[in-house]
Every structure is written in structure tokens, then in C-alpha cells.
Picture 1 (tube, one colour):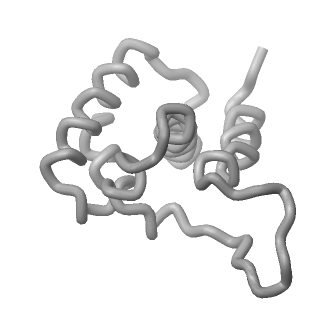
Picture 2: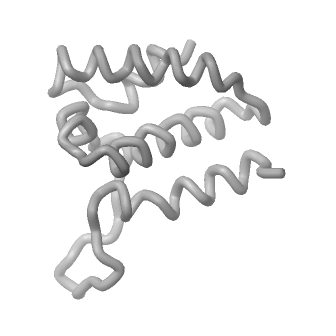
Length: 104
């Protein structure tokens, strides 16, 4: 059974995948990312797998931030659909803010 910390850790591991980053890097490459820098456009332009991973990561981040240890899959699905619709309409908005407003 996955607890909140495990889900969050798993989602952090998916971050490089969702950004399309390879496992190798040079000193010149940036390896630190800030969820507050992802725009809706960044998420919407990602391929299906990366987009799903990014949205799952953001959901995990918000659940972890709330301190809750449970979540309603149907509510997350509904919030995801609303997030995608909103991001398509407002691609410059910060993705995490848009999702946070849909999860309520």
C-alpha cells in the first residue's frame, strides 16, 4: 500500500521523465526544477505520457502539501479534466495554480 510519502517520492522520480530529460547530464545542464515555473503551455505541449506524469506529480504535490493521506480518484479525474480545459484556454498561467484551483 502506498502512503503519502511514497507517492510523493514516486512523483519526484517521474519529474525528469515528464520533462523529457535523459538520465545523463553535464555540469552545464540544470538538474533542479521548480514546480512553480511550469506553465500550462509546458504541460499541454508534453507528449501523453509526460503530460500524465506531470499532472500526477502536481496532484501528489498538492495532496502532500495539504497533509491529507487519502484522495478521491473521481475528484482527481474531474479536477484533471477541468485543469486541461483551463490550460488550453490560458496557456501562460502557472500550471500548479490552475490545478490547485480545480482540486477544491
